[in-house]
Amino acid sequence: MTDPVHLALGLRSGDRRALSKAITLVESSREDHREVASEILNELQSLGPRQGMRMGLSGVPGAGKSTFIDKLGVFLAEMGKSVAVLTIDPSSPLTGGSILGDKVRMERLARISGTFIRTSPSRNVLGGVSRYSRDCVFLCEQAGFDIIIVETIGVGQSEISAAEITDVFILLITPLGGDDLQGVKRGVMEVTDLVLVNKADGDLLASAHRTQADYSSALHLLRRRQKDPPGFPKVILVSALKGHGMDLAWNEISSLVQWRREHGFWEVSRREQEDRWFHAELRRELLSLVEQQPGVASLIQLLKEDVASGRISQRAALSNLANRISKSRAF
Image (cartoon, rainbow, N blue to C red; front, side, top):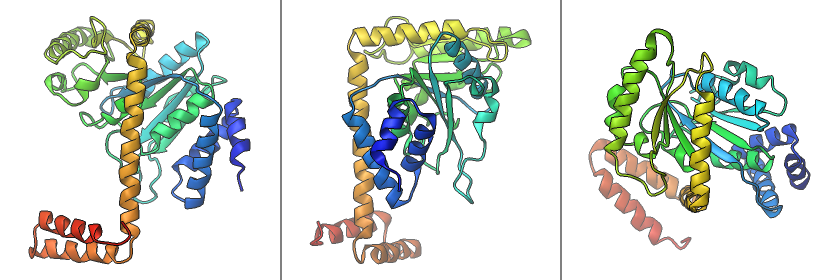
């Protein structure tokens, strides 16, 4: 049986194997693993706060997210920064495991001592991240990483959950990707801090400049957020393949974080994120408790059959279920 205190202390001292094991326990569906994971998280919390910079990265498949992270991660490592990368992959419908494996696409970064790359399955959770991504980010912070990069699945406009566990949210797009008009849509654009137009090189450079102009215009149509300094959100050009623009991207990220720290928005955002994720987990736990009550599972099945047969509407079925649960002595 894993000793939670021993594992927490090992993780806190920077042991990568302890970090990997802690993440495995956090993501496990086994009840005994979940209990150990809870003890590890509590032990780490008691050891005092550690904060790294949490960076979220989203973009459609093929935008070059993994290549960009590889180049940016190497750039940061050469500056003396310690980097952890948490990638979220689509889940296999058969095993529930990851089916892409982004680590193989970050070859240079994976070879640098002191970096950490972990791929986790989404397990069909919407929003671009997994249910346990927040806890995994916390574990990486406790392991002493300066920068934690969260790469989302890459499904487009709905990936706003990653912005709720990170300090800076980046959207990676490509010229001639057929999504120039996506810039005028809301959703992911409303939570984006920095738009990077990737593949801005060679024959695509002129198109990249046009895409930059289109997105800059679209961002100006959105309501200005209090947490943004003048000029943000910004749109800049990069080429992950060539390694161009990594210094510019990092300078913009650093200046944004510094401004938010100086003006109090960093801590406000962290508190709001904690509150949102607490309530999200609370709803899940309450739902689990309800489903475990005697007779509830059979009642749900009966109501589903009634809805499917047309004998009752969905709203009436849910109201019926709520009334039965509220009258139960268990609550």
